[in-house]
Image (cartoon, rainbow, N blue to C red):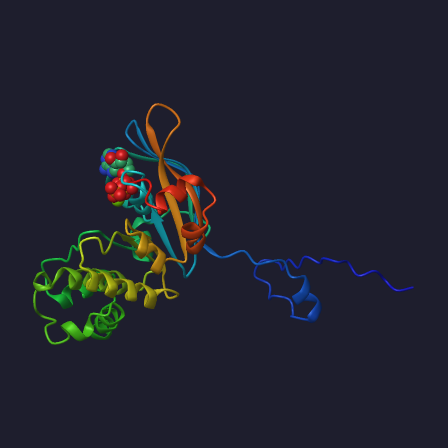
Length: 291
Ligand SMILES: Nc1ncnc2c1ncn2[C@@H]1O[C@H](COP(=O)(O)OP(=O)(O)OP(=O)(O)O)[C@@H](O)[C@H]1O
Ligand SMILES: [Mg+2]
């Protein structure tokens, strides 16, 4: 009598154990692997004093991908982005409910070192904000603060190359960063953020003040950084989201009680959000009928 072979075998290796040897049988019967999440936001509501800015956001950010956050002004995109590296902590009225897991750890946990959070999760703001220092010192600032003094010249060069700025500034590293154009300053801020090799880059409308050529340079840069870093970008530019993002999350202002509150309407592959969204509110927004 032959023994019946179960149609589905769930292979669940013990934590830390080597994965099972791949055989024809295991390949066929492996369950689909869920994408690795860098951030997992669960039921996140954010308040500034009595005002609620966001309600119950559940959003996973996938590793090595670019995720775009889009939606009308005031729907909480910046608020959400800043909550990912605890940038809102300095706002006295800020309060968060729910949890944001970073590689499985609660980023708002009581034992979390905020300096370490900022080291791993870099941020670039809408308006370029270089320090009134030389180009070199801007990029060297964070490594120096962390005591990474060895090989500093190489580190600065690598970050400037990574930000596609090296060729334009290599002969003027000692000049003030304030003498750079807006697009160059924004790439310098990206170089400054990547100089300490963070895990994640958060970009809040990084190209909104730039001309199309500088915008193109920033978008090319994002493509080249993808995979090395996980990137979350807020943008009002739909074409930009469509060009750069793997996944897109659409936020909107919803009125359930008295006042409108920011909510995540849907998140999906960027192509799906723009071509065939599930929610009519997303369809109206991406087709320009709203906002
Ligand atoms: N520091 C703060 N104190 C009080 N309220 C704030 C603060 N920051 C943001 N808000 C409020 O939270 C809500 C969401 O703001 P947020 O800046 O996150 O929106 P946004 O989607 O980024 O908008 P925009 O597209 O205009 O940048 C708004 O009603 C805003 O007024
Ligand atoms: Mg904003």
